[in-house]
Image 1: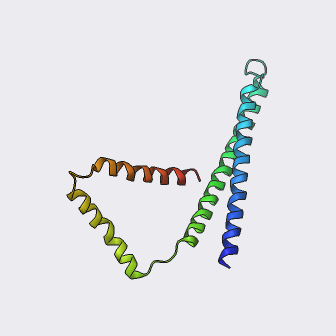
Image 2: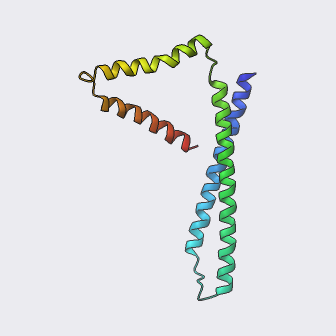
Image 3: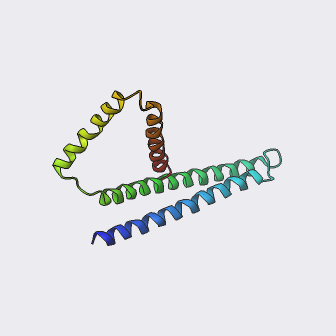
Length: 137
């Protein structure tokens, strides 16, 4: 049952991503079309202001739809990630909590052998990747 749920959520996620790309493309096309318009405020001010207002409303609507899709996609991804994460037994969880601080003490104790800046840079690269990957969703 978990496999079907996972497949369904993957399918929904792909549909949301496709719709997001389509809306982003459509929004960009609308922006380009607005820039390419030959009607200026001096030639026909009423028509220009009406068109400008219509384009502004379309753009705002598209941005709201895009934000809603991004939110839904984020929720779906959270659900999928929660479903993929196995439960850790209490003893294992306790071991994991104490493993990293001990390791850091050992690294800090041997500063002459290891360059802490290189280790920090590796950690930052991992954090940056996670931040970028979650922001792209």
